[in-house]
Image (cartoon, rainbow, N blue to C red; front, top):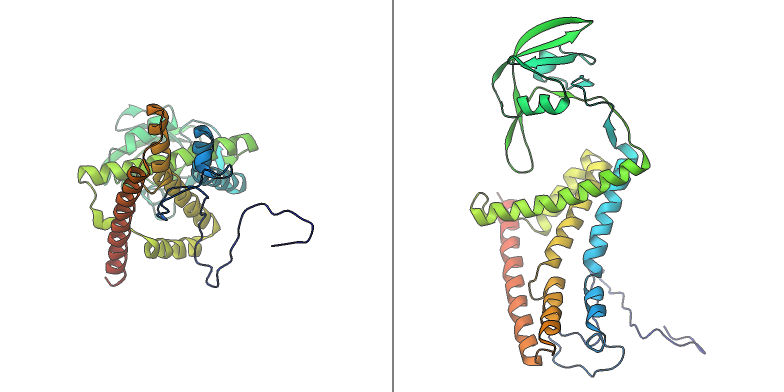
Length: 307
């Protein structure tokens, strides 16, 4: 906007009639917009030192990571919790689970499973997880008396797709402090990246199929389901999507931020800029690959939408 007597920032802003998505077009940047020239003006990206170019190109990835961390930390402050102790003491019994059906109660102390002594919650988990849908003999202490029961475990799936044995009990928790919430936020952010890495491993190894990938339609469906479950689930999904965006954008694929950074690092290594023709070819190949991926994912979405 022009104001009399005031100098503009040199940045042009535009609000579209249909505010669907957004983008930043950088002066002097050879990217997917297919601009084939730049004028070496001081304000153009290619005129800046390479470390500044990399710092600029990393901004989106860093902000997505920071957003995920802030959301996870905020969720931890709001409803996060840490175990009161590491002892195998039941803090909560899940309704309808094997533990409730066999009269286990909060305050009971798990003594042994299949004759193996249990001294910590980790010991308990390590004995139950490998036994989905199996009969186990469990000894516990209540009112200083040792009792014994036989029960059949249930099961649940973790994010890796593994089937784990469960009996439906949880530790006793207390609200997390601010410093603990920051630690929880950091851990869950790293866990979000870990889930993406594992998903890629599953795709490349054949454990998962390409038609399981989802795009905007699937994200919209998941967002609707998460919103119905509560704000914690909704914001948790938002943080996970931010992790996805950060991870995918930093990959050295032409057309993505990581691709631009990779090209800049190559130029720094060979101590000269790549030719304009080479840059254009790299960006065109990257754009075609990304478009193919987007079309494939949209086909998956539409196929899933119509069953």
